[in-house]
Amino acid sequence: MLLATAACVLGVLLATQAQAQTQPQTQRQTPEADAWRAIRAADCARCHGKDHEGLAAPSIVGFARTQSRERFIAAVLDGNPPMGMPAYRGDAPIESRIDAIYRYFVGRADGSIPAGAPGSQ
Image (tube, rainbow, N blue to C red; front, side):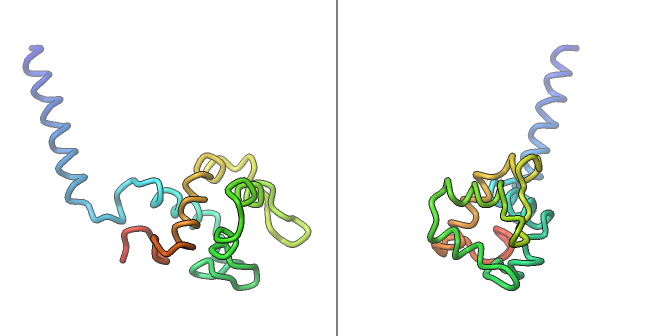
């Protein structure tokens, strides 16, 4: 019985691993992809533009290029309500992924991550 259960668990693990290896890169759970999905859910593009390079609000990519990690994170979490930037402190999907969001925009700023979903190019 124990051997059959172990074989079943091993089979499930191998099938799961094989499925993960055949999934397109855009469906894999990477920190950058997870951060990108949180950014999409927050709809940052509504003000910052499709590629977050600026629209009605300034470029997040440019901001990440010129600001420290601490300043970037404070700007996202605390916002600037008088200027129309909402605060995301207490917003679990954003707050729990803030380091990955910062790394995503720094990657966009230094060119190591292209615009769009990570892995979609």
